[in-house]
Image (cartoon, rainbow, N blue to C red; front, side, top):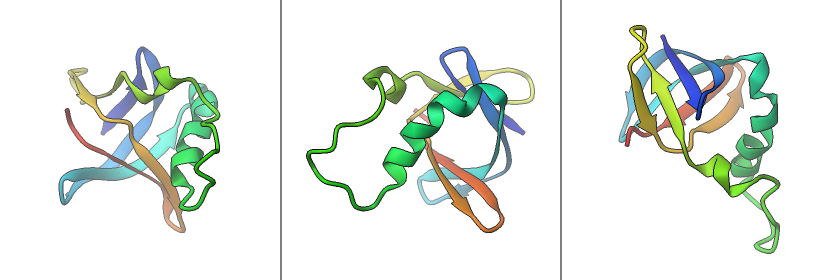
Length: 96
């Protein structure tokens, strides 16, 4: 199981991790501190939005994401994509 972080803030636990092309994929179980980050995930989920729409978050949220393994080793990842499906909430990311 992996853990997703933004800076030092715990976002959630990721299970069922597998490769999906160049991306990694898993199911995420959000922790209580993840609530302020949900607008950024929802923003990037939208397939259609006006080009003039301003993002509803601070640009700092685009950077400083990481995953830790069971041993606590941290590795930087790009901004994760989160989307809901019938079997749960999925997360996709790329290792940097």
